[in-house]
Length: 507
Image (tube, rainbow, N blue to C red; front, side):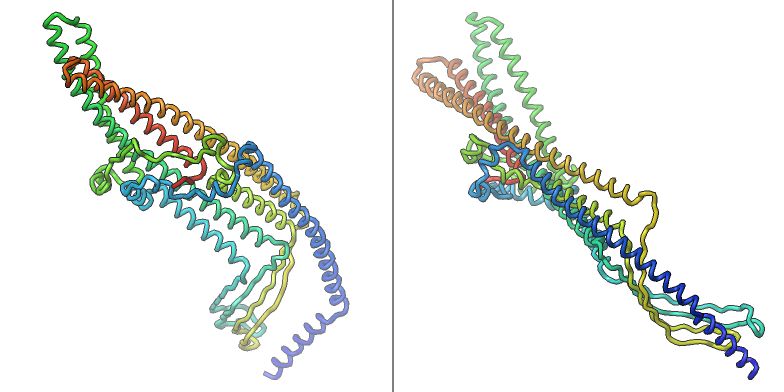
């Protein structure tokens, strides 16, 4: 045993003397000096690249402002705070209809697209949390145990070895790589939220549009039923006159054709009502078998003649103000994606620079050997700097890829702005035209009613025959149907304006 102890101490002294050799120490110091210069050179180049990144942010903002100025000047002139302050996202409440309110609530609760949009938001929020976690140390634990047999100085070493400990690793975000990744995810999350809001606008406007479509069809069907009944009475009178030889068969033939056409339309309206209600069921995420439950408490009746569809006079004459257009969620989403992609460019720039990590480990180890059992605590504190010396411009190429995607996002935003302006202009123009057509239809209806009142009074006094009286009533019903159609078309145009300016309306 004394010989073994002497031999082990001799080996240890030999190793220590070898390490302490002055040549190896000077070589080690030289390596550290070169590594320090290399790191400083990369850091200096990193500062230059960071300046380029910040300059790109300014350039992007200028291009965004330029895209926004693609909107006609008239929109800037009409951009006053009072106009936009009167807008509300609950625009459908101006109709004061409990059925519309209940229907929208059911749609928002059961719509499958909205549920999917919420899941996309949850996924983006989880990705954001994952990116933010990079700001914190990465802590791992490990434990290993083994039973080994290996050659030794004094025969085979057989023993149980184990090691356990905790390691902590932390990356210093000197170049802003983590910060840019986090901001990119934040913008992506905001864009996803805006996409959800845009979907809500589309679904609510479609719900109101379908509801009034059913109401208009039911009202038209009611008027058609009255017209068909009236025309049958008129035909009976014409048949009597034909039998008396007072009129030709052509008049009866024309009356039969008109009755058949209106009867076919009456039947088709029934199918259209079913189709519109099926579309509402789909919006609610319901199936056809749930029709009765889905529409329970929903009354498809509304006084279309008195529906409030007025807008501020400046909207009709001058157009929609600038502030209303840029409230559109789809424009906000497109802008958020530009900013997210801008941060991705900055992140790729920061990938060029070396990564600097701090590491700490502490644990307990036990190892059996021919010298005996060595056990005890261990710890280690270290730092590392890792950077690419040559990669054939791979990382720079990745920067160019993100730059190209950024330009695509900017082009998409400019296209969205111009498309929004066109959509608003088209919607306002349609509203103006429908207002004029409704006014003409109302004037015709008023004249038809006046004629009907005159004919009815003359008929009661015996001055005109029943046929003239029925013809006047039929003309009034036909004019009423035209007013219903124009009123419904104006409703659709109004909803189009509301949708075009981002789901904002007037109460």
